[in-house]
Structures are given as structure tokens and as C-alpha cells.
Amino acid sequence: MNRRDFLLKTGLFALGAQLPAAVAGNFATALAGTGKVNLKIGYLPITDHLLLIAAFRERFKNLTIQPVRFSSWPENAEALKAGAIDGSFLLTPMSLALREKGIPIRVVFLGHRNGSVITVKNSGEINRIEDLKGKTIAVPSQFSTHNILLRKILAEKGLDSARDVKIIDMPPPEMVVALASGRIHGYIVAEPFGVQAEAQHAGKVLMLSKDIWPNHICCVLNLRESVIRAYPEAVQELVGGLSRTATFIESNPVQAALDSQQLLGQKPQIVEQVLTTPKDRLTFNNLVPDRADFSATQTLMAKFGLPGAKADLGGYIDDSFAKRVLKHA
Image (cartoon, rainbow, N blue to C red; front, side, top):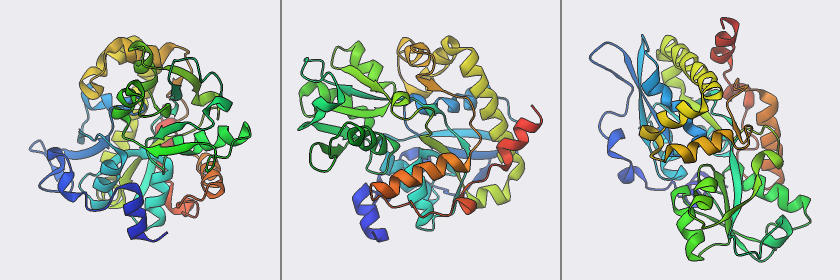
């Protein structure tokens, strides 16, 4: 697949005019009036990106974090590709596909482990994975861990994802409404859209992603290489702050849920349920980028014919900042 086909396929083509106002203007990393480096970090309003509450909790010496909210993965990826943001919590397969196409990004930290759900209509007709045959299921992107997870579990249950199920792309915030209106029969996506569907009686959680692929990675923090080269001290402080925030979330899920409102715009009780029921539904442990995790993702990407399976992991993974945090912990 060439670059134009990739952009068209993922919806990344000609999105420059659709970027949020927060990333307009100077697309380079800017120095704030305090002399700190201002890092624009893209995210979606999902619990996978809860680490970004560090922007409000941490008191950084060398930087400020400016969270830049997107409603869809293609917008997020396009902003990172164009240099409109300095970094992004981005889907692993999409990140690898961008890297394979030569976009100068490197992964410096994982966003989380686990955290996604297969959610279906609660009409009673879908009670097991085999019941998805003939149904329309939404994923947030063809280049998502969710797409891989869905195809993985379908294959394990004897279903052909190309023939037996209709898989479509849909922005995460639209999925609950689409399920309730009958446009789709189910979806697989990051929380809180599983808990949210149950709270609204629009659907039920059929399976947690941790039960498809235990401790899988999904969203990872990519930074542009130019940012890493120009501001290594700020990057080190950023990773350290995110690591402390991960520990805080694990130890204080109720307060983390309260702190999430400004970032995610979700009711705290919804986020709290994601963080506690069950406790390993979404985890923030072991977030150092590890080659084995990315290699396993690439193996499945190759199996399902997704671009990015040949991205050079040696050039993409930068675990030095995270390992330095662990060394001094």
C-alpha cells in the first residue's frame, strides 16, 4: 500500500484544515514565557489516555504539557505526521504504519495495558463471540489494536473476519449512539465506551480485551524525533511525570477518576468503574516500551495484512527515558 492509499484508507488525506484550533499557528515546539518547553500532546477522550492528567497534577521544571484533544484517530495521526503536535498517544499499529512510511517519530512510553471491550446490543441475540456472525461491528480504525483483537478472537472461535463479520471504522465517541440506534450490532474500542453503553442501557460488554490478549499494549506515546533531539531534559521530565502519574492512578483510582473530568469530560463514576471493575480491566503497570510487545503486534499485523509490520523496531523504540526513570525510582 503506497502513502496516498494509506492516507485515503485511514482518512488521513487532506485533514490539515480540520485540525483543532489548539494546534493552529506555530506547529513547532514553542518556548513558553516562563522559559519552559511547551509540548503539545495529542489524545482522544478515552481512559487509555488517562496519563495526561499529569498536565494538571505535575509541577514540571522544564516543560508544560498542552493536551490537544481529537475526536478521531485519523485526525490525531495527521496532526502528528504534519508536525502540528509534538507528540501523541497513538494506536500501536497506526504508529508503526507511520514509522514504516518514514514519519520521524519514536515511542518513549506506553500509555497503558488492556483497557478495551467488545460491546454489543443487549437485546439477547448476541451472548458469545460466535453470535457475531453476520453482524456489523465497528472498530475505531483499521490500523488499531482493536481491529487486531477482534480478528484474533474471531479466528480463535472459527469465524472468518473477512467473510463472516462486517467490520467498519467509526470514531469512538459515535459508537454508543450508533449501537443504540441500531446502525451497528457492536463495537470494540477503548473504555469508557463499554461502561458508558451499559450505564445508558444501550448495550452490554461481551468481552474484555484482557481476556483476548492478556496485558496487551494499545496506545503508546510517540514523540517527534526533532523534539527528542532538541529537548532531552524536557522529555526525561515528561516520562518521569507520566510514570509517577501511572503509579498514582493505580493507587488512587477514585481520585484519578475525579481528576479525569477536565481531560475526558466523562462522569467520574464511569471512569472509576473502568479503573476498578475488575481491577485489571485497564492497567498502568509496566509501561517501559519493550521490543517483545511491539514484535508480537507486528506478527498479528502481518497475519491480517496491515501496513507497519515491517517497521524497524530498533529505530522506533526509545526506552532510554523510561529505563532511566526506573533506575532512579
